[in-house]
Length: 195
Image (tube, rainbow, N blue to C red; front, side, top):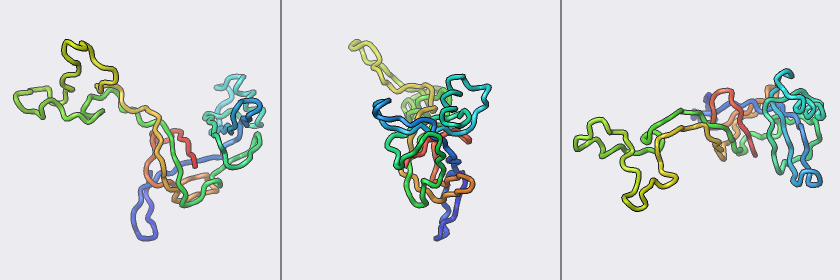
């Protein structure tokens, strides 16, 4: 992440994303696959870390093995196998959705994970139970804890989509997109950008 100043002198937080070049590795059609989509590959992968099946798949498109492969339905333009797609499909000022895997935060308690207030707000001699969840089950009926009860557990590492982020700048020669605000995931993680 970084920040830019706009024409009014306002400091805007933004994220710089390398968005391409992506290679069309497969064109899905209604006749063969039952739906229409484009499969795009990004970021070269070492050949010795790829399976023979994957190498054959990428060889059809005339490219080397790729680390990240994603399908996009309802692509705006017609593309052929092996075509390159870069940041030129984006324009400054338009809005995009960015999807990624959020940062993992490990095993967390109910106060951090769900925003609980703790037991009794630390009154009436609670001693060391300030951040405990309190009672979770019902009485003799139904004598169990309901499914979906909010408890402590693993937090983060979820698929998250952030919608309507404005494209501030398109750096075509370096395939960079500068997007207003933050996107899910740690530094150098993969994200999916949709118009």
